[in-house]
Image (tube, rainbow, N blue to C red):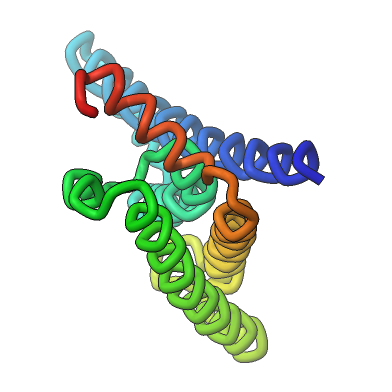
Length: 186
């Protein structure tokens, strides 16, 4: 089961990375088109006029995909912001209780968000909602990616909660402690 979950989180992170790479590629092509236009004018030629329609909108959708698909991996690698200084005041037992409490609250919030965005995705699909840009993109597509990212995040939170409840150290907490040790904290 551990391998399957880690593979799921890894595939989600790969999707996030590919989204960022695609943003960079699209923007690079757009910039290259502008450079070619400038060079053509500089040498007395006509502008080619190359442009990627709805680039800003597509880039925004890809950025949202990247952010939501990266959530599970960020959790497991302790990439989210947490105030661990306060946890030291509670001792090891208090730290464990607070971590479980935070995981339960986070799980509830993420599950609600996944459900709400899932409902919105379905409604957008039923209505045939499209974006306002030059290229009409069905809104359910980026919304489905958001729902997927949040659903995998819910799975990751549940994974960490089950780990904590079984008496083991959640992955994010283990990494935080390693960082604290490396930084000289007790």
